[in-house]
Image 1: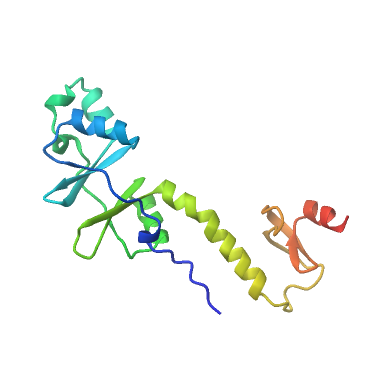
Image 2: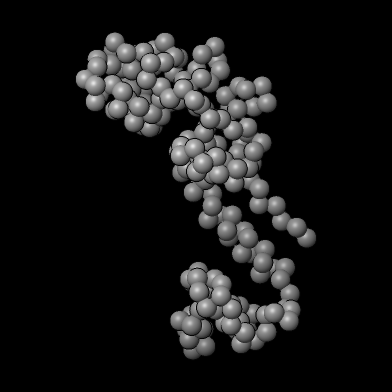
Length: 186
């Protein structure tokens, strides 16, 4: 039996996405971000995502330059090279894109380029422990003793009791670190 851990982005993304029009001013956008308690808004033009405006954008391009937020348009400050991801991509792909481009948020689009959600590093971190638990359960259920997991065998791996990484010993159906092995034997 195979297990598929390729969780699609649409199962993890946040909806609805808080957006601003590119012709709005920074004052309006910043107030919306404060009201919604978020660190970024997706910038739209004719219902299509064209950029992202982050707290950092406002800080570096408005506050640090002592500009008046009511006099500056979102399109002048937003990050324009918008990187998006398709809703059917996996969260693993999303994490790779975020790492490669050094971004914390990815607007999620459908096959027509329409904005349908947003996925953040926090969204991925939130589901990662659940995926690891599923994988651990799968391994426990479907692993059968083989010539490799003989009683007393020592390997480099992860302790199935505490999660520590290092030398583990196979004992009564589990790989355990030395500390947990002592507790387990008592």
